[in-house]
Image (cartoon, rainbow, N blue to C red; front, side):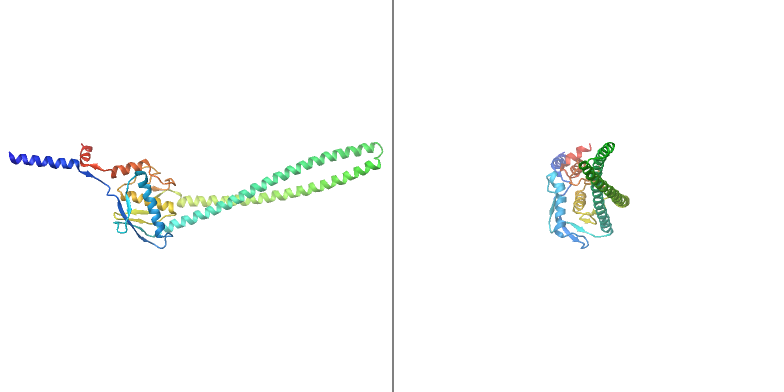
Length: 304
């Protein structure tokens, strides 16, 4: 009887201790260090560290937790390994830069076309106003001439006035003819600019289509990976993308798998996350699921 009582007592004590035991799934903070950086990446060690710190902040800021810590003796290494993925990224960047340059030229041509069109419209208004005024003056002149002719001729003084008006009308008619010729030349110039603009737009749209077909689709997170005690970065097009890739791999280092939601840091595709990186509700829920401290009793009761 005494033996059985002792066994029961020991079991009760162990159970009581287990009830109080706390289990932390995430072993944080994760101590990391910067590993090698292939010289073909256009990034210095200091710039890499800045991106890493920014990626830390994506998690630590909203969660108010010390999750990652830089340590020269850290167990986890972050390295930059150059391969064909970065070569493709650089090709994409070059293609995008050419498109941006072409778009700039298109905008300049469009601005020139709009400016010429506006100037042409002003010239047409001026031409039409002067032409109307000339018609009015010419009608008045012809009426006076006809009136004096019916009276047998104009007095010398009136004749001099009429002659002066005739010369002025002829001069205005000549000026309007020149203006009409200039307007026609202006139209030809506008049409040339418009034709050039249409050609450039067609070429630009073709380039955009080619870019979208080659690079435009959302890509899986292959720019980096997490392998237990190391994060390897293979490609990035700019600092913002590098920060996103690092934040994604930091999530994996915490034990978080891919989640739903195209704007989530831990979504399996890259491309639709916001420019101002922030954890989505799904990211936060995933962190809570794997990193929140729970007691063994909580674990036991959760499956009962």
